[in-house]
Image 1 (cartoon, rainbow over the protein chains, first blue to last red):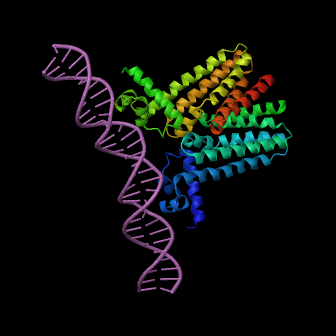
Image 2: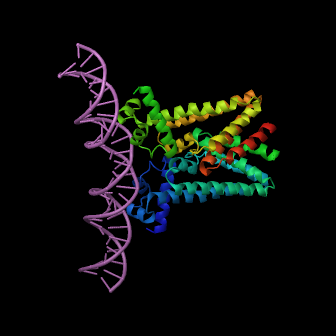
Image 3: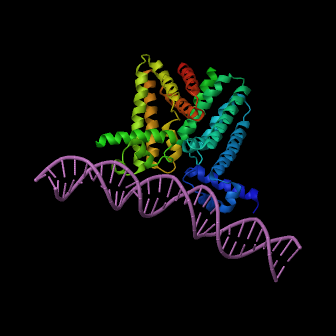
Length: 183
Length: 183
DNA sequence: TTGACGAGAGAACGTGCGTTCTCCTACGGT
DNA sequence: ACCGTAGGAGAACGCACGTTCTCTCGTCAA
């Protein structure tokens, strides 16, 4: 089996299991079982579990932001594009396997013990914030709007994760619309 | 030593260690060392670690909401009281040992494996939201404002935790003021 | 055909930790 | 003084899991 293929399969399993059950409750043996990649191969690809976790967060970051950007791109009006972010969140929250924001969860689980994970979380949140800032600038709005919109989105992710409801996305969207109007 | 005293000492140590280093990386033996309460006594008071975690979250919930309410009570004007919530958050974020919201972190760490912890987190967040709803009602504002204010506060907690900055509180406060004006 | 090599299955090893057990000490009542 | 009991210190137990090792087998070059 090709190394690249094995790597993808390992990451597929890691993402499914880590996101669904948390990092610490998933053993390397579970990854092996779910991916079909042997332990020996796993440790060749990722010398330690922490690096598998890092790779999982990194790949998910790229994909998550891609999916978001693709949804946003379907809208023409720059203000609509900003609101589309919250629509996309609503769709995400409604997915069957949704269990909150992977990075916020990882921070809660590993933030105190793994600086590499903290760096991944900061990087992801910064990238998301930068993306919002770009949308705000494209709409010709005040840069100061970025912070509040970001906080609304983060609050919605946390709340949707804890409660299991998609409602926070709609609440955040409504609040965002008010802020856009007032800004 | 009195049972009640031992219980408080155990919870003091549990709170300091669980909040500071996460639940899973703190052993019962660490609790014993930090509290001076013997293992035997610990297991008399809390038959399993999970119940110690529950008790920790429960006691912290009561104290956290008390501290917040005491700060808010110092303000007369009902709208000022709402904004005072965000001032209090800023002070909290600035504390030396601040490491994010204990419940959000606990959800990330144990949400997938411990329904009791999930219940504690939901309970705490619901109580906080109810409190905000009360403040909104007292100010004669539309009930629909509660959701957005709650999301701003949650977003600020997460972001302050991840970045270690107090800035999100000020951003949230500013956004809250705009929403109050527009609402 | 043979021998070297890579890969997989799974045992093995070391450690950490939740929980329980053992032993010892101190004290309170008779 | 003597015993029963509570409590503390810390060893012991069982298990989970990260990581490494062993054994075996298939493959491919010479």
